[in-house]
Image 1 (spheres, helix red, strand yellow):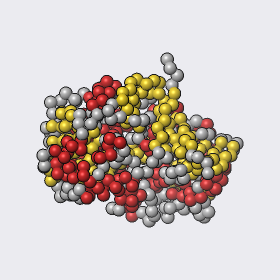
Image 2: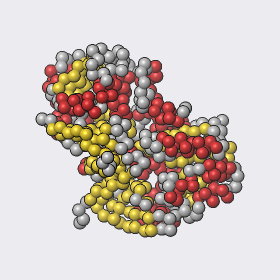
Image 3: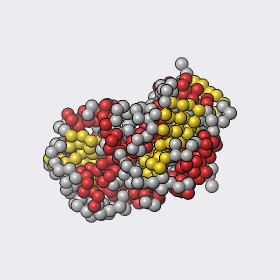
Image 4: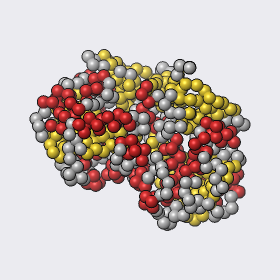
Amino acid sequence: MTEPTWMYENFEPAGSAIGYRITRKLDEVQSPFQKIEIYESTDWGNLMLIDGAMMLTTRDNFLYHEMMSHPALFTHASPKRVVIIGGGDCGTLREVLKHPGVESCTQCDIDEQVTRMAEKWFPELCDKNNDPRAELLFDDGIAYMANCPAGSVDIVIVDSTDPVGPAEGLFNKAFYESCFRALKDDGILVQQSESPLVLLSLIQEMRGEMRKAGFTTFQTLPFPQPCYPTGWWSCTMARKSGDFEYRVVDSRGKAFETKYYTADIHQGALAPIPFVSAALGK
Amino acid sequence: MTEPTWMYENFEPAGSAIGYRITRKLDEVQSPFQKIEIYESTDWGNLMLIDGAMMLTTRDNFLYHEMMSHPALFTHASPKRVVIIGGGDCGTLREVLKHPGVESCTQCDIDEQVTRMAEKWFPELCDKNNDPRAELLFDDGIAYMANCPAGSVDIVIVDSTDPVGPAEGLFNKAFYESCFRALKDDGILVQQSESPLVLLSLIQEMRGEMRKAGFTTFQTLPFPQPCYPTGWWSCTMARKSGDFEYRVVDSRGKAFETKYYTADIHQGALAPIPFVSAALGK
């Protein structure tokens, strides 16, 4: 029995850190793209780190995965074709496939090793990987979106690491133009958009690039996420037009269980926050 | 110019930690009750630690202070007489006194040194200390509530440290009985109630003790608070009866500015969260 020790992630852009009490390292692999480590913790289950940055814990990943998927899928009137860029831990895929109306969901992560590690250490997140509607690709998400047939996708979910390293190309106009082209007119792009408290400038830049690519309507939804810097995270939804049917309330009758997401939580996440609105200029 | 260093607070009950990049220690005092330290950080302004536990930062304290005060004051139909137990940094007092209808607010913190340090290092939180409606006492909050005239108070705000050390006596039936007695029939007790993710058992126990003291109606409102463990915190409101007028929506016309609190944020914080409701049994 090893004595537990504390492990910290210093998040330089925010000047703050998050740490966990861990018991041992369970696994490690250096993929062609990044270093993936798995630790066992005393209170948070297993932890996955990529290049030293906390990606997920067994205990709190439901917050992120539910909020990256359900708000977009319950806003779109009838999402059938979903693409996830990144998302290699398969937790977002799992939430998407809870929607019975979804006919196909392609997950395109550049790094197969993320999925292999998830299958091994977070098997509960992978329980929909063999769903006949699921397609798992290990390829470049930028190229995948560029080659997507125009007007073929209802929802694109960009579930990536931070905008440095492999994910850097997922936060600019060129990539968003591919998404815009691939989406149907009532399609929705949703992307993780960092901490609303300390990284508002990133959300501003992201929206600016999305706007240049043609998107017109934006919503940034905050949610708690203890394992990410500041413990407060967000996703940003972008639409080609604000003119389509809006149906948050429909999720009251959803046919599956969630631990955090509900129609009222969704509605609450849409409440403008004065200091955020001041920065985002709306 | 000192090189910045990282300072961490290990939160044992949660097995998680929060840290900050700090430039120097600004001040330190050992009061009869606790050790108070002030640090300067690179990104979060000044930090106050009590016995090694992060109490507040310049940058994010508005989240806590707004959510400890405005939901209760905007739920009560007409709050005139408010008591704050603890709250020595004066940030909650400042928010309470933004309400023009409040006629008096007594802040009773056992430790005068907390207020002296706040005046020195967080002067913006103390800008209402000389308001003629404010009374600052440095005394035992348990005795203060026990001696309060029955039915004299509209709102009691328990803005204390965690339920260990000096604040331990603020989390049990005896103290809640004093609050119950001091409150008018439509009065509200509100108390900080730790992290909804990792300390649900504390919220359960707190509600249990409040119930034994006679309170019947409870609401636990979550909010982001990066400087506290998990970055996700809560307050719990308790009422003697659920039969009084409920007026959240009135705050739409509030006469003062806030950075986080709005009527819609308040409403959103009332949305039941499935995993929390399951634990709290409602």
